[in-house]
Picture 1 (cartoon, rainbow, N blue to C red):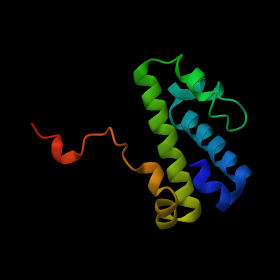
Picture 2: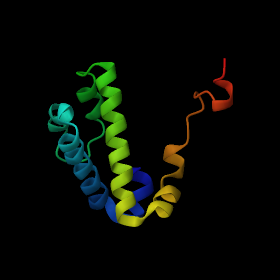
Picture 3: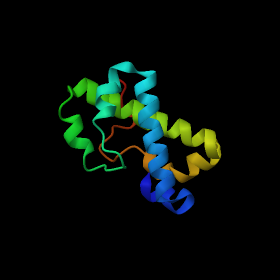
Picture 4: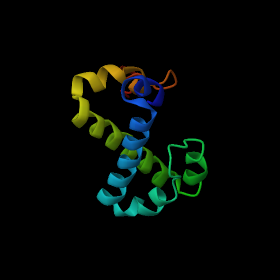
Length: 106
């Protein structure tokens, strides 16, 4: 997301969105406050794994989902859903290891 958004809103804009997303995560989900508080002041994503490893797998997945969803929704309120979808199209694509939905049936 940083790579896709920096040319549009600048590095400081991306960091501001990230920090605001952390703040909203903590205020919306009080159970995430401790995790959000441990995040470095900037957008140091290399520190993220060390914070998440302290969490249970369930809590780490929940934190990641809430943070990404909050970031996406916040960006959508600022630049609109169409532009957000276009800018982050490659970020939201399922990975090659994901099972296609038509293969999920028993």
